[in-house]
Image: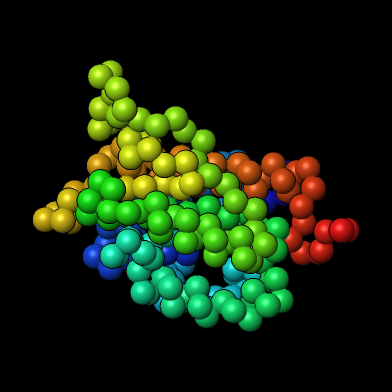
Length: 201
């Protein structure tokens, strides 16, 4: 089976989202034939060759004021020439985000990242988990406790460091990484989508 490469491009202001990104990477690397690499958003355009060589990309950033952080948005805007050439067409994509509030309007950030991927012609892989913590039998230890299917959400207490992230949110991030890598492996094995050439239609 061919080795697939997963690039996790992330921005983090206080370290919480970087910690979440590591869980995503570990999940991607848990999949056989998958190699995952963390790339800080501020360095991503200097590593364009790695991004081009990847089979999948997972985008991650904190949610600030209901939107992607400025550091990640700067990376997004810098990809306009790649977008123009559709250089990432047919690569698999996924996303994750983190905020201090349980909602924090994180969904708007995930939609923003999904739209970014769609404009690049990428193939979106969401989170394949039922919602957690939504019944009397549930709790904060449930996977997908914040109930998102577009991507992985995490909540960090604002008065704590990385120890303020719920363990279940990190396990959910791990699952997202594995999910994106599994989709990339499946598409690569089926040879139905090859991002190195255009589709015949």
